[in-house]
Image 1 (cartoon, rainbow, N blue to C red):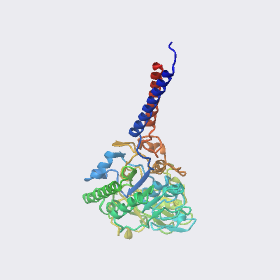
Image 2 (image 1 turned 90 degrees about the horizontal axis):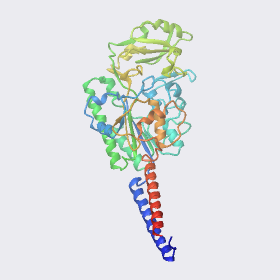
Image 3 (image 1 turned 90 degrees about the vertical axis):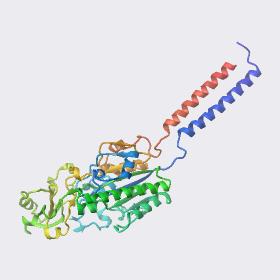
Image 4 (image 1 turned 135 degrees about the vertical axis):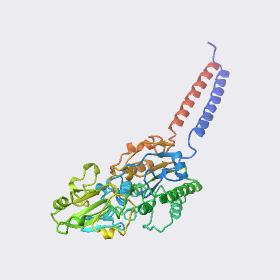
Amino acid sequence: MSEVTGDHVTMFAMSAQACLGGVVLSLLLTLSHGLPATSKKPKVILVSMDGFRHDYLTKGNTPNFEDMLSAGVTMPYVNNTFVTLTFPSHYSIATGTYEETHGIVANNMYDPVYNETFGMGTTDPKWWNGSEPIWTTAKKAGLKVGVYFWPGSSSPFNGLLPDEWRDYNDSVEYEHRVRTVVSWMSRDDFDLALLYFDEPDHSGHALGPDNPQLVPVIERMDCILGLLVSELTTAGIVDDVNLIVTSDHGMASVDTKTRLIDVLDYVNDTVFLKMYQQGPAAQMRPQEGKAAELKEALKDVRHMKVMLKEEIPEEKHYKNHRRVLPVFALAENGWQITANATRRLNWPFKGDHGFDDDLLTMRPIFVARGPAFKTNETVEPIKNVDIYPLICHLLGIEPSPNNGSLERAMTLLRTRGNPKDPGDGSSSLTAATTTIWVLASLCFVFSFVQI
């Protein structure tokens, strides 16, 4: 073995220096090509297009939805909660809880403890305090939240309101709603926004879900989606936003004039006191102690099923709340229930909802795109209560107690990693580390051979 001289040591140092420089250069190149240029916080926009049945996209020309389907992930339909009404379903989406849990069990209801009634204009917080909505969860986590119309969003939950919210006003143009939400997300750097549209529900009631005249309404909602994506693109945040478009329920064909059940044709005020929710699902308040008699009097009425509150199937997750009244009736598909036929005939519906959630016609749409979501894929249906824990996961915040399943919703996502870094970067870091070790080892061997 030759003697190690000063020249050898100098050569070793120079060789090591050169190799070290190569290692650093390789590290920089690997990081620059393998990792995101910047680390951006996650953003989520949740859109509800009321009454958008799962199969409406087959009824017209919807290029913007088609683009979103290609760029994102969908499912055949969402399994929604029972009953399939606007306020209960929207609050289940917002809270991740069943209707018997959050307490919004109908659009119109009676609370025997308050001895008061609730309608679609009720904002008193005491009605909305059964479960924590996503905007409150996000606010508690220090995030900025805006809600442009959503049932319950103008009622403080434990004293908290979103950073921006609006009292419902159906005259506000859809385009204005879109541009306001994009401004919140871009200029004001909001983390979460919820956005509500009352179509195609409004037209679905008037026209019926299978009426060709509904097609232009569906196509208009496609244009609104296109405007939203376009505005996000112009604002430079379209690739940073996880966008979810869904609905509260579907729509079934009805005919108020020919398929209407008036319970007062079968009972009188000796057993019947009042009906608070009418339509496909009916909440009936009997005279004191007369629930069994009221059910007995109505049990043989065709085209509806009547039951005592405690007889509602457990799997409906509905009966265990005081606002579900002692007698409940569910109409056969296509029929409606009332206690005032004259008044009901003033609303000559051709479409309605509130039927059994097992009916395909009651199931709504779901499409999502963004950095966290899969692309051009269709997955198995999730439940509407799964959307709340999904959004919490996307925002990286702790959910409140809920009935949803994050595990079920995870099928929508590219990765099960940390949603705050959708590309995660872990594979790139691993590659960088491997490269450095290989180069360092080669440098050591090369230097040793030179000696």
